[in-house]
Length: 285
Length: 273
Image 1 (cartoon, chains in turn orange, green):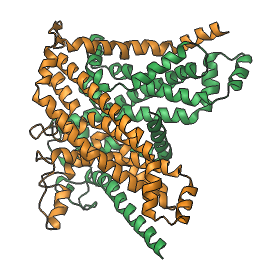
Image 2 (image 1 turned 180 degrees about the horizontal axis):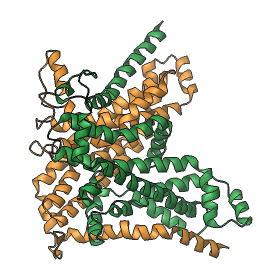
Image 3 (image 1 turned 120 degrees about the vertical axis):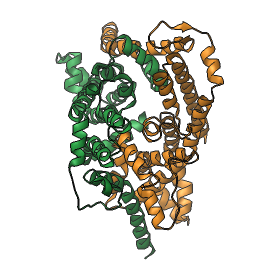
Image 4 (image 1 turned 120 degrees about the horizontal axis):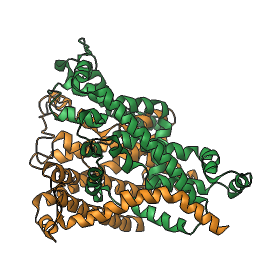
């Protein structure tokens, strides 16, 4: 019996085993191979030892893209958690229209990033953008959202928060609905205020969801591509050059496939390290 | 009294942000029917409504072809991910064999791999196979995903073994079991995997930009990105908004009818993924 089911299990898994060999294992090995080669994609790859890695260590654009991602995350993650939490608490406290609001908040999550980016590109426009027009109507100065090197990445981080916050709102909301009502009732009897209940009961019970939000947002930040690609082309002065955009440019604008692959490898290691560190710190709390 | 006030404030707060989420989409849709000089106005109405923006888009780029390309790719990828995800997930959940444990560990390992790692090597493989400028180049590398297999496995484990044994005794083959017994019992999982896969495929731009250069083979989001960036829109804002409206509409329509399933899918895949 065991032998027969062994054959069945293997047979049923074979399609995936072949797929994984072709599209997971082989590319993985090939990426290691490419780190040590210079390659334009057409002529034969040339062994160059550690040159790609040495170049990466002294590549100012590599550090720039890393710092840009960091800047994105430092703004994006707290904003995301803050708004998702208050939206979720708000939605959890109402009865009528909850489904409607939830659906509206979630809408940007399902729509293509290209759509969101094209629309926000207009909203952020310096001379004609609706946001700046509104500001001037209130007597405020125009803000150089995407044209200032200091503001371009924060502007993209705000837009990304607008796009994704609905996802984290519904996750928090699902978490809140799993909190037993008795906890709050017991706290009320003990004379706790709403704020105390929020800090002492709600937040700790949502901690696992929060860890997830931080990790997903981090991976998101490192995957940023279409937003800077369409909005700024990575500018001004590389202020919005994201890691994936830099890989893309090296590979497809300059034809440095070996170096682009090395960049991808190192960025992947950084992402894995970041996620591991976040897990370790957030999950023990 | 206090309670009523706080309810009012909550609704007001939620409503203000609801407008903040809805307005950009409404502005986009109304702007797509406005002449350029009216687009940047805050109001959603215009006395000069025109279909000219759409005419310009249809004139400049093969939108219908791109829509079809996107649909072919997304349907093929989704179908394959569901079918193979179901088969492999079943072999991990309900067939007792030694490899199941190792394969599960391997799948969990591949789930942690960032896509940046294999992006360039995958591209070079597509080039080697001669699949650039070919929709297969978009379909093949996405035909199976570790996440979907794991999700099916988790769901199938909860199905009682007695049910499967009974079907086996009735002479049902393993494949018949999967598609006639196990999958129909797992509609929520099928729906979740299908929705997430379809959306991911439909909205992807990076991979199409890398693999496809021929305009008649581009996917819809890719073509529209190229349209806006490549200057073909000639900075006609109305045309850009018309293009993005066309890109958003199919998903928005699906979303309006199935929003419950969409949201549920994201929650369950996010929590498990």
